[in-house]
Amino acid sequence: MSSAGGLAVGVHAALRETGGVWFGWSGDTPAEPADEPRVFRTGKVTYGLIDIKDTDFEAFYGGFSNRTLWPLFHHRIDLTSFEHQWYATYRRVNRRFAELLLPLLEDDDVIWIHDYQLIPMAAELRRMGVKGRIGFFLHIPFPAPDIYVTLPWHRQLAVDLCAHDVVGFQTGGDLRQFQLYLESEVGGRIGADGAIAAFGRELKAGAYPIGIDVDDVISMARSPEAKRQADRVKATLPGGRKLMIGVDRLDYTKGILERLRAFEKMLQDYPSQRRGVVMLQISAPSREDVPEYLDMRQQVELMTGHLNGAYSESDWVPLRYINRSFSRRALTGFFRMSALCLVTPLRDGMNLVAEEFVAAQDEADPGVLVLSRFAGCAGIIDGALIVNPYDTHHMADTLHAGLEMPIEERRERWQRMMRTVRRHDIDAWRDRFLADLKIRPVATIH
Ligand code: ADQ
Image (cartoon, rainbow, N blue to C red):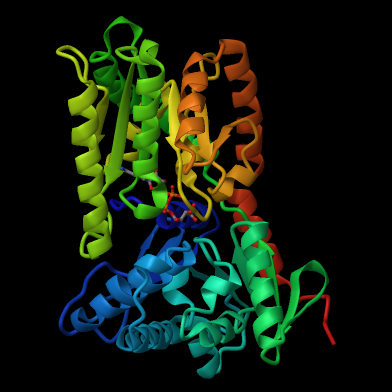
């Protein structure tokens, strides 16, 4: 897998073990897509991959998915575009996905659909006569109803969500927003255990926080490749200089600018930290055809230039900014040698980087996690230093405190973090969701 992204990492880890059919976009956008999926098998997983027509791709993916649903669901109405033609294409592509999946289905198949690009797919399958159990998991946050209703098609997408048997969200907060919307806008009713009655259907909605494959990350972090990568960085940090790290897709939801501002403020307010610390920000290029991402990249580049220009000395540069993706092994090596990791999204479904950082640590000398309260995983990980990324002063103080934290406290916090990351790992997520999906809801609402 070459792209940096939490969905692919998480879902692959879950499927590798149980086996099943992975059905999705091939990554290709030809002028004349084939009429059937390309099917092949690797290990226990059968892949059915389909192309998206070049002329549909822009509106479906770069348009409705990433310039309408993505910003809106992350509370960025200011960056949201509402285009009827994008929406029409989004529905058409979802119908085609359903049509191409249909011949591969057997009667007792359980279908699990992932993320905001495919909200209407189950409703299309139902229209084609599919009666089996269908679940949906939303990897990103669900917005507050006041924001969600700015979407001209909010009702239609809610009907689509309710065509599933189980709808999963990352956090209890996301689940509540969805329930509030159904109750206040469309006369839906909420029963015990997440039961919902809406649009003439009954379903279950729940919170299923996604996690990581903890042992896989541990073994990557201890691998020779991770060590080699870490040693290369260590060789550039003379005299016990500490490394702080940030790793994300270059996305405006990740709070990268806010993080850099806090780093600058820390250098300003705590001159004793200067020369003693280097920040490594690794931002994988993402959605580069979307103009808002280009803007974001330019702002980060400007800020990097400013920060290094203002604070560097002849033998010390505070910020290393890398705009490319690394292998997951290399990342775990960097995590393991870092004294502190900054995960500061303005809004984020869960955030797997935070969990990967925790799992990659050396338990004898673990690093500190500084975590935004707006990451879904802030409700899961116990032991991180929680910050508000809009509060630059407090974040700067927290960075200083994190860098100075005594070893006993680091160990104690890390143990708590690791316990919670393990309890909510990828297997727990998959098993809980599938257990709910495979049983018919017991609670009915009248
Ligand atoms: P993402 O927004 O992509 O995921 P995240 O959960 O942090 O965010 O997952 C990113 C994944 O990509 C991690 O496994 C990370 O290691 C990898 N990655 C990030 N930057 C990288 C880089 N520079 N090079 C290589 N790999 C990199 C979406 C939602 C999240 C949700 C996940 C899973 O936005 O909120 O947690 O799905 O549901």
